[in-house]
Image 1 (cartoon, rainbow, N blue to C red):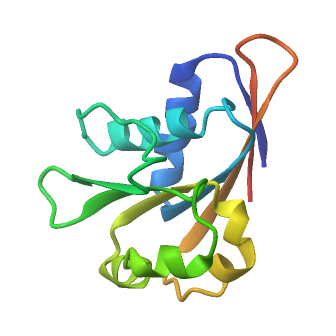
Image 2 (cartoon, rainbow, N blue to C red; image 1 turned 180 degrees about the vertical axis):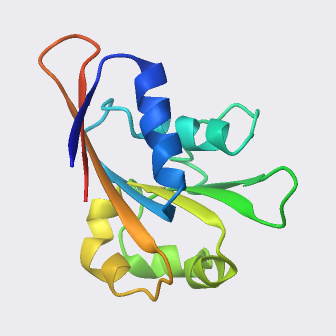
Length: 141
């Protein structure tokens, strides 16, 4: 499915709609395309009011989902060199716990992520810059 977003609120709505079917989001796209904005939309849809920023340097950030025993886990693979780094963050345990997980730069480990055991479908989300200034082309697989 390919969608076009021209405003942040449209991107947030797309993220919210995907939450109905998915709890794992693998994001890809060039620098500045909107991966973190998409993650913000997911967090907002979950009722998280914290300021969501990309965890590029800390690799991961956790946020408590209100009225739930689940967490919103935001991971950035940009600086990771091996899939083992992602495993050391406890990704398999979190998948089993059914936390909501969003991984930026997931395409670095596409094959390995596909081989993890999931009960729910993974939403593979690619975000590209469009021709217009605020346009984003969002492809969901």
